[in-house]
Image (cartoon, rainbow, N blue to C red; front, side):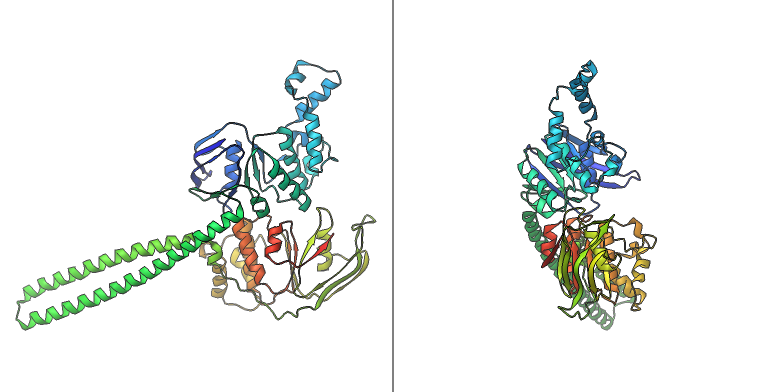
Length: 528
């Protein structure tokens, strides 16, 4: 069991990241932790894992958690055995079996006589049987590093497992192994992920905001449906509050007009009846005070409704506040843009693909490039872009403009500020205020315009990239997305999905996120 009571975390600069987070995980629960980028999900996992100290609050747990982090750079100088914290046990067992039966070796082994067997089984399950435990972590790919730590689960057999974006660097085959493991394990799981296939395997969803955890009793699809219901209700509340604000302002106007008429009528009567000037002044002051009080009452009511409306609008999902506007040129559907015949590429005289590639890309195609890690997907993209020439076969390319967007959005210049980056794509002479209107549409307010691109999160870089594409008048014939969802939360994936679905040109996608591929209506595949 895991119980969090009023957990808060404060940055070194004293900014509060989140506060008073409380929830309970029962034994064998398989739970998703979702929320917008920057809300503190990874930080919360580190606090539970004991890698960070909470600012306040209490954690109660009946076993030490096993943590698979999102990033692995801190382990590069370690061997696989050291990173998994099994080096001493494995070394002690080996020495004992060789006859070095010392008290120290027996203590280090701690009666764990099956450690070597579990290591072999775990590495084999995750298709890492060719790795040596003495191998340095820095020699491994991102997917291999993830699988090493996933193998550690089978080695250590923990009761509580914390996973931070475990499918990020995994290809389709490795993801399938991960899904099967999650389905079969009896351990308690708490998983941060944007992989909707994975999230639908889990039986509970926790949504994290800065001040609370909301519990939804089901996988992602159930959570998504519940959020739609809540957002529809929120939109209705906004509409009702807008209506109430209009009525309050109209009521204020009518009341002021009526009071002014009464005051004017009273003044005329008093003048006709010959009321003394001093009395007239007294009556006028009373009338003015009465009007002022009425105005104050209505102003207070309007102010209260306006504040309620502001808070309701701020709660609306960002995707509902954002409007897209790709400059869709008149693409000639069905026109051949790229054709490959008996295509191959050699590295050190060894051909990359076992079979030569034959395919064509037509204008308007929505196409996925699929293959395991290391199968040559990026090489093929470079050939299509004209950055590499094939070592075998023929290609015909009629592509005039293609945009390649990788998972780091490296098309953006990290040395520029947000407004400067947007201006860089302004090839149609938009005025400054028009550029800033586009930035506002993509949720970059006045306070953001001078922020450096290097300071942006993955979701912010994605939104700026989309904004820049809509500023440019020259729409690309082909947009190529290379693992575009890897660094995005679910909300930003939905924003990207909506934008991509408005694009009418040719789309090429490298992604292991099956849900994303389905939602952007991929119709064809090139299998490597």
